[in-house]
Image 1: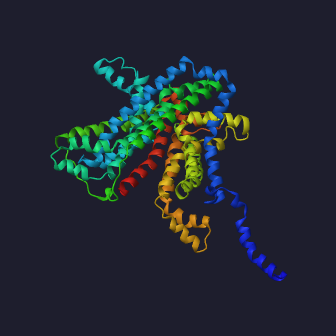
Image 2: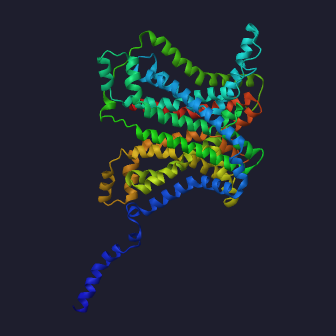
Length: 552
């Protein structure tokens, strides 16, 4: 073979050889199936979400015997028992309220059922510390109810609201919507054939619900109950104001008063262990329960159960729940605000705190949605062991209450990030860690509805992968992105313990303003920012509920 011919062959083969032996070929197959930048972004986000846990473990390990003493102390066992009691009671109470309420608003001729459905969700917009403050003002010692009863009936003191009883009642009324939403969504999608067969056999509506419908709702009830249990475990504001010692209140006292970081870190790990146990228990139960629906289940017209003589009791039940969960907090806040204005209280509305809350929430929403995109895309478009592992890592923040995330980032900021410690940047990062799973779930659900061949067609026409994603996929998943941003905004507006621990010293938010006024028993000063917070949170929540209703 002559020299020119060899040279021509080598030149023709060089592009093929270069493509075959590029550095990308050294990567494992699972990493070659998606852009390297997408994998790196997802790994970075998952690692950042796990950062607080890592530093809690490091802090507890470094403290050695002190952490062990805190873990195996008799007081820790007592705190654990109190927390479990509260979780069990709140979860049971929420299920007992939410399941019949969801069934009444979906499957019966309950009067004004659409209005009751919207009103039943709005307690989610009320932070627990606002609800606790309202119930203390209304039903506590020397509260509004006692004042009204003292003159005509001579009632000098009502039963004590503090402790387990008050914390259970307040948290049930504020957290039952988690079960209500999941059960209601499932009721919309259940196939009606089995219920119709039950009715054709002469069974009543109650018998059909108990024997047919209720067993089909067990997975939805379990999912909602898990959310209630985690919410109760992570709550700080209600248990603190109602003086019931759970993990969150004791951890905050150890950090804020005693400044015992070792004990706080050890207790935070116990708290995380309880949360993970709850998640694993629900996941195990969900794997054992398998229910399948047909493709046209949600499109068939369902029979409406006639309540008959039960219409009045059902209406009273729906109205009573709404009055207690939504009416009492709003009434008390308006009452205290009116009294404050009449008494000449100045600067009741802290517009600076409202501005800070909105700015932090908007920034956290944008950052969280951006962080959730690479993990969501990989989990849907590149399913596998590694993408699933990254998705699970992103859920670490869901299992960690705000106080545990805050403490983990305090340790990180003091040691390695002093430049951003007690700045808005670290606070927003904490919000991203806490609420990343909310955004991942919403975006992932939207991506599952996108045909992947749409992107492939765009790339076949010469567009890059990123350009195809931005111009083809993003417009389709825009509702999911908006829902994720709204939910993160709502949760950020209400978040208290992480804001108290990590917030800039001179910067106030609505949550911290309410907490400060409530601790000092300045109810009028707490009422105004509470109303601002409820209104700002209720608007996006109402939008989501109406959007879901119109879709169904």
